[in-house]
Image 1 (cartoon, helix red, strand yellow):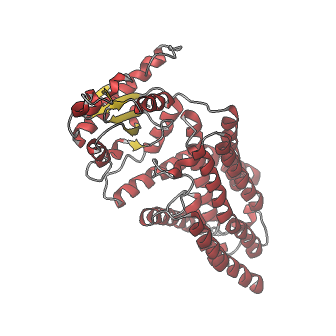
Image 2 (spheres, helix red, strand yellow):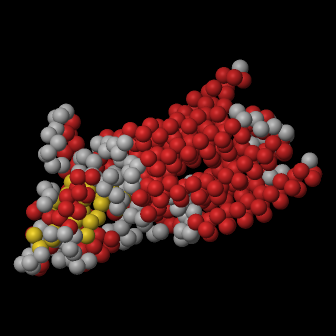
Image 3 (cartoon, helix red, strand yellow):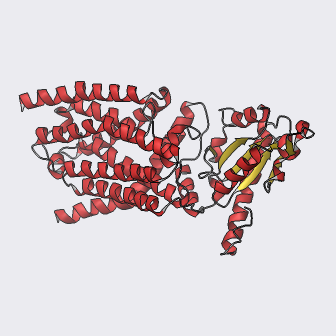
Length: 290
Length: 151
């Protein structure tokens, strides 16, 4: 019976994440527009964009690139699927990194200097956020005694009680993962004329649509991880988790609209500083009290 | 769902005096906010649906304009913004100017003005958007289009 429920969760993720991710992106654009004093597009705009891209002619640069982008989409779906199946959180994060590598390789495979620079910046971003992601996994293990998502959500107390520092650190790197300012160095949803669109420079038509779709899957998965900090064995913790997810998403939009872009050196310094201060100290205290 | 729901445009400055360019960018400001129609100023020919050109064509940028146009995936529409892009305008008699954009590309929409007003540019873009759907429908009816055929 439990297995059926877990499969239902995975199926729900695979089918509904694009809808949810697209809607979140739509609200993001609407709220951003309102913050800038504009009317903004419809909340369904990301779907219009996606369907249009699928209908456009696809200019293929090379076949490897298409394969790598499909690999990115597949492994993002696998990452999220494994997470919502209740699998091993460590494996989930490794699959996420693998998906990221696919995306970087797709940009590297094109001959354009813009793609190459985008790929380098994406690598730099991974270097900045990966330590925090691993710390989060270790934090979950120490606080609940298991890497399994099923065991973490079945814990008596919410993980955030033990991991407030790691939660803050995770929110911090979420800015990079959501491709928001000030850390949107390799690809962003705003500055279309700038170098920061590097990663997707050589992609067009349905391949670009696949990247967009992967981002939606990825965002829903990442918000799921935010929820994992909150959820425990009580039923009302799920409601709190949804509220915390919505607040964090709004916070990311606010940060996006308030901060200008930084240089990569600055990103690395601040992200690692937060990882070190919030993440490592949290972990040290946790190992002492547990 | 139609292409017209999400027109992404590419803005190229030919030999414009920047008057029309400023007006094009003014369309993105909160006053006019073209993003409410789903318009995004992409700056990348491979992502764009509408090619917006300001300024006339000279011998140096003729190949550039042609190359950008060829990199854009179909269906695509060309909009000439300002009198210089339409027929060369005040620079028409200059030794280096070939004339309007239609000397190198098939232009679909002409937006006159010096400088073209943001309202006129938006009107041109809206007309271009309608044309995108027509072109798409046409392409769907003819499964194997001639690769040399423009648009």
